[in-house]
Image 1 (cartoon, helix red, strand yellow):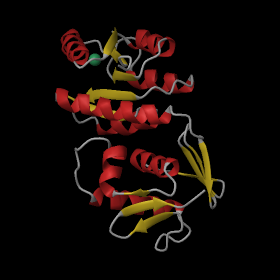
Image 2 (cartoon, protein in one colour; image 1 turned 120 degrees about the horizontal axis):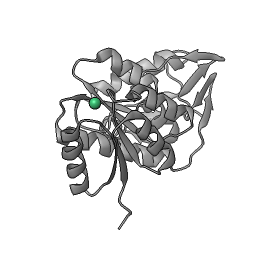
Image 3 (tube, protein in one colour; image 1 turned 180 degrees about the vertical axis):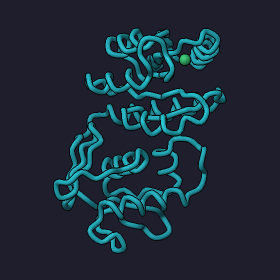
Image 4 (cartoon, protein in one colour; image 1 turned 90 degrees about the vertical axis):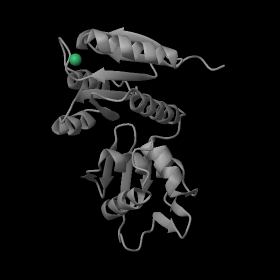
Length: 231
Ligand code: CA
């Protein structure tokens, strides 16, 4: 059997700590708890965790600052952030600071488990040791820092576009069905609409292809899905 996966839970609300850690342990995870931001940061930097569940509103140091400091120290552990209902601005800020996914309180436990599982799957692949820099055409991608440049100039991608591009880059020449992309990139079944994939592919082409209507890199494979033909 594989070693149990280690989760760091950074949360100050005792009842939520209890519910979450009980449930996570019941699912076979090893759980460590930190009850304020400073303790959370120290634990995340010092321990080898497979994922961090990070509340935003925390004593001593808020979740955004914890996340930013983690990334600045080069800690690439997947982070799932928890925030209060309706903090849409926070979501954008959080993703910019390096959170990998977001969940709004109050959340459904099954939803949290599904998101966590998806993060862990992505984390394992990211840790699998492929190259982190890719070049195709006039586009340069640094997957580790999630930076994309075209002709030397920075290109802004949404978090989902970045993940989709990363998946294409790490699976060159493979025909990728929309279902597979939904499963692997979106990671859970919140939006079981294959059209979603088309919309995001179109967004990537618009930003990265010399002629988006006649793509050279992110190709359509009629009736089957997409294929990345670069690098
Ligand atoms: Ca809190």
